Amino acid sequence: MSLLFSEIRFPDGTGKRKMLREGGHPDQADLWELMETEPRYATCKAAALAGAPICVRHYRYQVKGRDWLAEREHFALMEAYDALAKRHTARPFVGRGDVKLLDQYKFHLANRREEL
Image 1: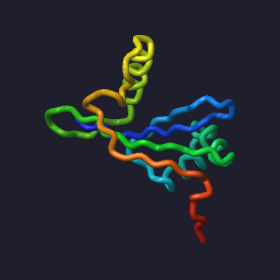
Image 2: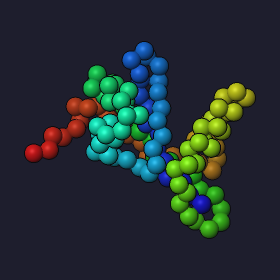
Image 3: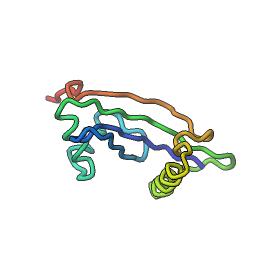
């Protein structure tokens, strides 16, 4: 089984770091579309418009056996894992040995190319 996912991190208006998870590996254009169309990205959009850096990390969770791509409902499991890990001062899900960081990038809204 494989699960491709990304974490999008950004500061909210109060200085706290926020994190959203997204299935797959969105690039800057994908992320901009999400900020334009998805209500759960409103805080991320506000941070980007204010000039804050948006950090995106791409991951692949893979276990041994037949390789098949898992669906989005696994995010709930990762969030429950993170909550328990935090409570027991353990590493979060992305810190596990079977989760590999594939890529990451940061951008500011000024990096976005205008389309004609």
